[in-house]
Image (cartoon, rainbow, N blue to C red; front, side, top):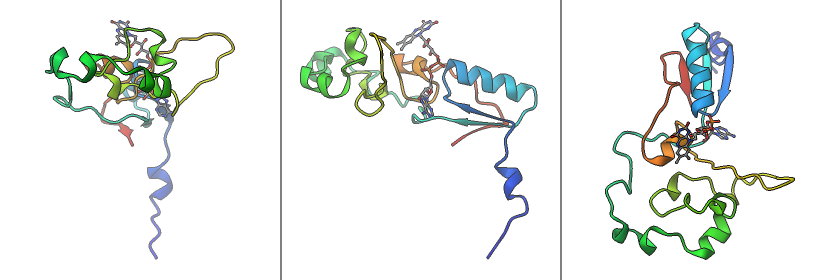
Length: 139
Ligand SMILES: Cc1cc2nc3c(=O)[nH]c(=O)nc-3n(C[C@H](O)[C@H](O)[C@H](O)COP(=O)(O)OP(=O)(O)OC[C@H]3O[C@@H](n4cnc5c(N)ncnc54)[C@H](O)[C@@H]3O)c2cc1C
């Protein structure tokens, strides 16, 4: 059996940032710049440059002329689609499914939610991530 005397130290952080969007990314960057050891946790997947499956498709190349069928909206995007411009064929792969990560509301609260490395800005097709510095770690 192997015990590492470095174990506790390697998993000890000064700060843990949850989410790599604008808020989390910027907070992590500032903490890293000050020399803190930062762990960033991100739920969504990493999007690498050129990893944009629909970026070069025209409307007529997308299912349903880039719209999402009513049944699919009702099952997965019933809150996300309240703002009707948001859920399309060409970006739904970046959007949180309401049935998987629902949220409670006492009154109507529209909350557009992306789920990728870099947060919501990544869902519009361009990535703007501030948090990746040498002392932050994404798992
Ligand atoms: C298409 C589009 C265009 C926009 N254009 C502009 C613009 O031009 N100018 C402007 O100022 N604003 C714009 N916005 C708004 C701006 O993107 C948001 O206000 C901003 O991204 C919010 O930042 P945030 O860090 O709070 O959240 P987000 O950017 O949404 O980041 C949250 C991150 O946390 C992650 N996360 C959530 N839950 C967990 C969990 N449990 N564990 C781990 N990770 C988790 C998510 O995956 C996500 O990466 C736009 C938004 C969209 C969707």
